Image (cartoon, rainbow, N blue to C red; front, side, top):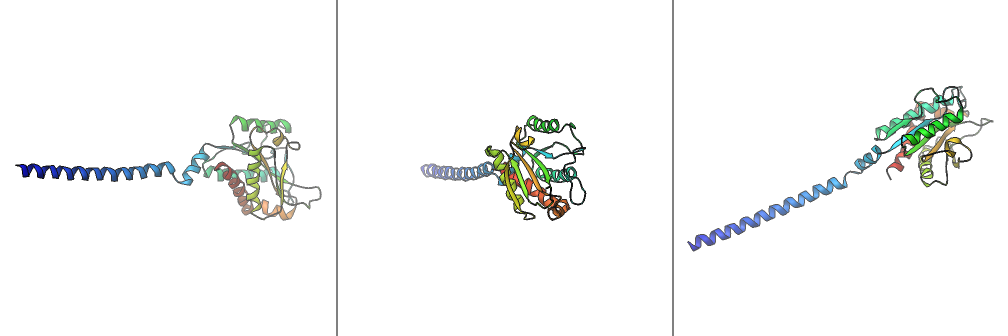
Length: 237
């Protein structure tokens, strides 16, 4: 009887040991799973950030305010809208909420200052993380080239946004860079901005050298992706 009891005690001890090992093994696996979920994939984290962001995209001009004229007679307002929609599509594909100041050839007001102020106010109303206004440039002589960005250079967030966008555009090497310019005393959209703002001039469309690239579908897609990437770089920080 003692031998049987001793045998049962040994058997019970082995069973407890085995159960303990199973619990430890499962606990390690459970910890790894929790850690994996907590850490997550970088893309998943970025998607989560993007879903919380709203970017207000402003295709400059519209309707009777045609903007400047391209070397081939096309209006800036139409080129701005085409590029802006492509920027928005890139952002939406990355999970960003996009609001446009216009999606057709329209204006809120024929009074330029009122129209621009409406866009500024709307960007604040939708709680935009950034406002990005897209334009094309021209010069009196038709000889200038280059991409440039206007922003509030004293605003750290606005400056970071403009810098990121410019870096991506400069990387395309379709034209030269005229850098980042303080637009607070020059442009209504920048001077009265209520959210971090960058107004991007993608090039001089009255110059055939810049214009051919900017007006072409391939060029517009590349420019739009560069602007979107510049925005996403900042959103994902």
